[in-house]
Length: 75
Image (cartoon, rainbow, N blue to C red; front, side, top):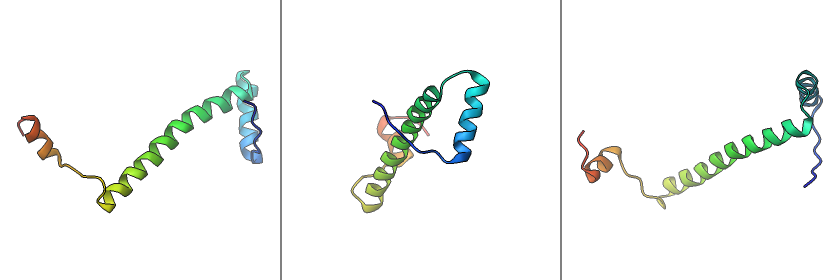
């Protein structure tokens, strides 16, 4: 799916330098950046959602010692 984005001049300069030095295409780098960044964004926003549930009391929290006891693990 073709997508168009506007980059600030510093980001475009850095990307152009990388392309020139390595011979890879801008599309290769942008695809890699998006795929890796998407993993990070998913982790962040999903964790933030769970944290909000914990803070509001909608998500139950268990201590490590309680879990060890429940699993029959020694301290």
